Length: 327
Image (cartoon, rainbow, N blue to C red; front, top):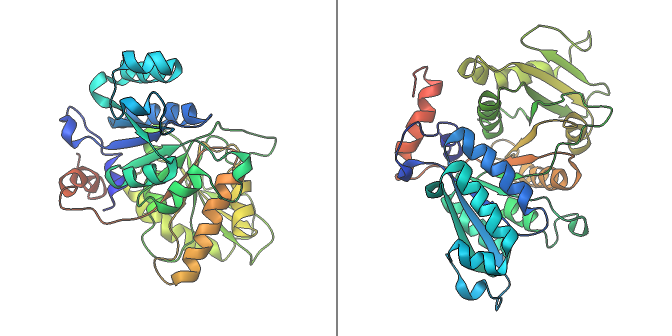
């Protein structure tokens, strides 16, 4: 059981000390998108928010770090104070904590991710395409758990899975943290999930609707059986989630970008933990970082990690879902 699975098994009338934690990076022009997404996620999961605002060293707010009152924040950064007040009014003051820290946002957020179940940041600025100097790229590269890069959903004329949760599946046979995260999110948000495998062995795209048994093409690709095997255990654990399986003919990044147009969320999991080895990890990195720059909607990069002894009691509720019991 991975730590991020505790987010979906969030508390129903449970003490604050066992609530999942969402860490939010508030810096930059798009920090408000990150806060809006994180607040919605906290509202549906019962999580608490830790808002991290990185101040320039020597600034008035930095001199009052780490936890000034909202009245003090209002004096020097009124928009920040209003955003925090709005989040507290929605979720409750005890579930929203503001922390001000002087320094560099990327390393500070990556360090804070050690204690969080999910990190939410804004998209990289266009001047940082490729990852150099971008906070989002740094956090995705160094955080041990899932990182969500928030941006508005943009649906063009070709949106094959409009409003769906799209999960990239490599089908290497290992447990897939992306499918776990994707099914949990789809169940919470009542969304259809599209599991997408991209292969260079075919030219056409193919999808199959597991709910209606309808197909987009008549000839089934060889990769479809592999994809369905990867999805099957999660369909049993989440029978309420409607699922489509799609095999796209393309290189990994362009294929995923086509599938993700108009999606509610694109979910990418860690690659290279099994048979792919270091080469797989390199490929995963290139696809994940490329997706941060090229996707037209929000994307989350999910890594599996072992929970500590302190975290195991919180994971029990998530595990019970797959064992067929009610949390």
